[in-house]
Image 1 (spheres, rainbow, N blue to C red):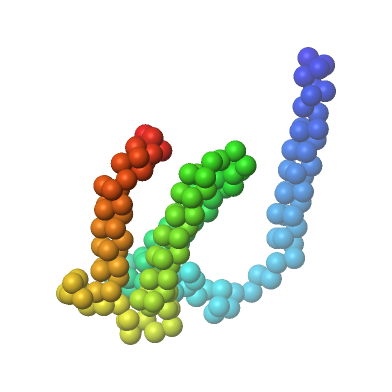
Image 2 (cartoon, one colour; image 1 turned 135 degrees about the horizontal axis):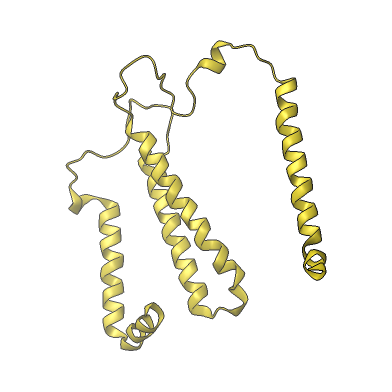
Length: 171
């Protein structure tokens, strides 16, 4: 039992000191806090809507959801980045190139979103997004993506060893 305490002594001391500091700062903040309520403290925050001015089921602007989804997408990119960076030394060129392709695709998506005005927050009433009835044949981004996909399909058909490499890499 004595060896057990020797091994975990520093961890127990660290937990005790961290708990002591946490409780001290938590209760100390109640001693020095200003307790006066003003209009700014009582106002709505984060979502921008006052909770008392309308019913609970009022319509939200779609920009709140779009920004949330974009945050999740770019947050997941960082989650993929850490394990890749930790084993970068032992990766072959396939692992390096796959992450570069992933980052380039994310950059293209970010530039497209920026160009469409999705990230513009100031003019909520004015939207730069295209209409819902898109003419896909004349849309530049649609043509570019379909051209890239078709080129990749032709390259894959003309190089069977590349298709075998993809099968090995993704299976």
